[in-house]
Image (tube, rainbow, N blue to C red; front, side, top):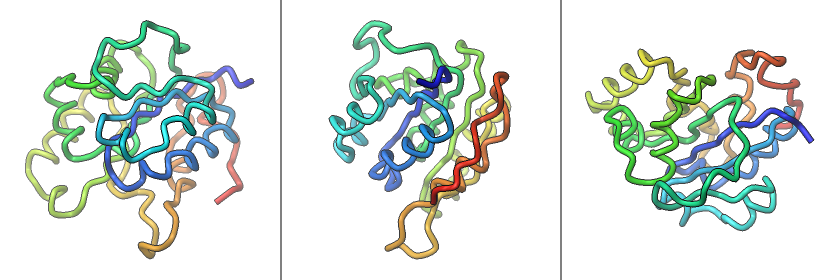
Length: 182
C-alpha cells in the first residue's frame, strides 16, 4: 500500500463524472486517494464506487462531518474546481465539506493544486481571474483551465495531461511514477 496520500476535491463540472479514471491514474502513480466532493458533484458521481475504489469514505456534505478518520494529506488536488468553487474558496467561504477542506489547505502546509474547469463565458468573468490570482498568490498551484478537455466532446477526459502537469513537489520522490495508461 502506498504511503503518500492525496486529497482529491471535486466540484460539479463534467470531469467529476469520470473521477474514478483519475483515481486509477493516481493509484498507478503510487498514491492513496481520499475524495471530497461538493454536494452537487455528489449527485453526479457514484459515491459507493468511489468508496470501493479508494477504501476511504467520500466526504460529500456539510463541514464538520465525521471526525478525522482519514490519513493526513501529502498533496491536495482540487480537480475539477468550478467557477463557483474557485470564487468561494478565494473568499474563504466554507459552506460544504469540500470548501471547508479547501480553506484548511493552507494549514496543512502541503503542495496544493487546482485545476479549474469553467466554460469560457464564466472564465471570462473578472471575479474568476481575480480569485485565481488570489489563490495563486497564497501558494496554490493553478493548472490550465480545461486541462483535461478532450479534443472531441465524445472522447474521454485526458487525465494523463493532468498527472503530467503536476511537477515533482512531493519531498519523498515527486508526484509519482510515469503513468503509461491513457
